[in-house]
Amino acid sequence: MPAMLKPLQVKSPTEPAALAPGDLPADWPDLWAQILKVRQDDASAPQRQKRLAHSRQQGWTLNGPCSERSANLFALYKPLLDARQSHKDLPDSPPWLVAQLGQSLDGFVATETGDSYYVTGPHSLVHLHRLRALCDAVLVGAGTVAIDNPQLTTRRVPGPNPVRVVLDPDARLDGSSSLFSDRQSSTLWLCDARYAAIASERLASTGCMGSTSEQAGTDVVAVEGLLQNDGPPCQYLPNRVTAALAKRGLRLVFVEGGGVTVSRFFRSNALNRLHLVVAPVLIGQGRRGLQATAHEVMADCPRPPARMLILGDDLLWDLDLRA
Ligand SMILES: NC(=O)c1ccc[n+]([C@@H]2O[C@H](COP(=O)([O-])OP(=O)(O)OC[C@H]3O[C@@H](n4cnc5c(N)ncnc54)[C@H](OP(=O)(O)O)[C@@H]3O)[C@@H](O)[C@H]2O)c1
Image (cartoon, rainbow, N blue to C red; front, side, top):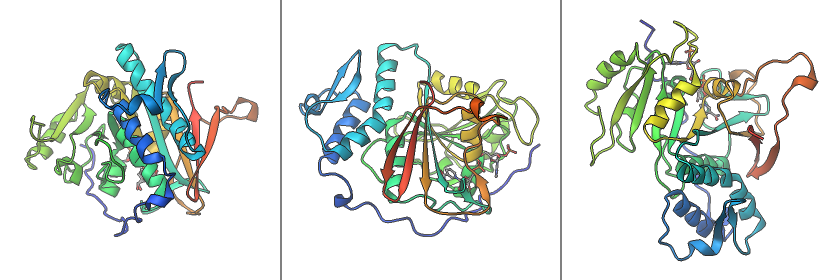
């Protein structure tokens, strides 16, 4: 049986302050509220037609005047709204995945001990929470859960909490991480079918097994054939993960980290979009960020279409991996 590791709890005690109202354009809160209405398929709001319009050719677009900054932010989230619309119009459309990593200038997402609190600044944290709010599920690797003990909620923005998915193919987590028991949102502990019983046993002791109509809880999801080897490192098939989530109606998925997990999804060509946020900090040695497939000559290196957006002191690269 693989070794079971406890949360390291190395994170810094204080979170960066929330953004002040003046840090965002004056027209953004209303636009974000309307984006959320589209996300929740809420046609009731009379305002909605004023700021956002949909056509089959262009998908969701801005309707009417808007500040440049809000228009740029809208462009960042438009692909998620369009993907949700496709799923609504064509229920058989494939799962749609966006990933995000906050990296240092020298390409790390955390220090060697695993401390990543905080690589990026408050604007990027808000962006992270917006991505959570717009997706059905937020997925993280077992390493992130073990080290960060994260909540994966949308506490920095208005918007729904996504279902939290912990990808732990060989059930190495001990089940004590907060998200398994805090009931802030439903949680899925996703393991290869061979290890699911181990995860269920550990979860049973927390009393949070299973969601009810009143209370969010945690379920173990057993995925047949997820693991390709008996690690470590464990090799799994990302498309088995997305298929298992799609079966539960979770088709817009945010892969939030860490570097190993995002890189595995990236290299398997499972991602539609990648938001790489580069912060002006140097970590020196630590947990690697994005690791792409190696090429011998530059001409073979992929150069996906990209847009840039300034997020406070950080620079976000929005890569379109399906163009
Ligand atoms: N800056 C950011 O955007 C960001 C986002 C998320 C996380 N992080 C940071 O990234 C780090 C974690 O990322 P990661 O790339 O190392 O891992 P990860 O992608 O979160 O998870 C997969 C890795 O965790 C290992 N693992 C599995 N079970 C574990 C356990 N119980 N305890 C410890 N490790 C386990 C796996 O090992 P095998 O390969 O052997 O299976 C695999 O290498 C943390 O320090 C976190 O703070 C940063």
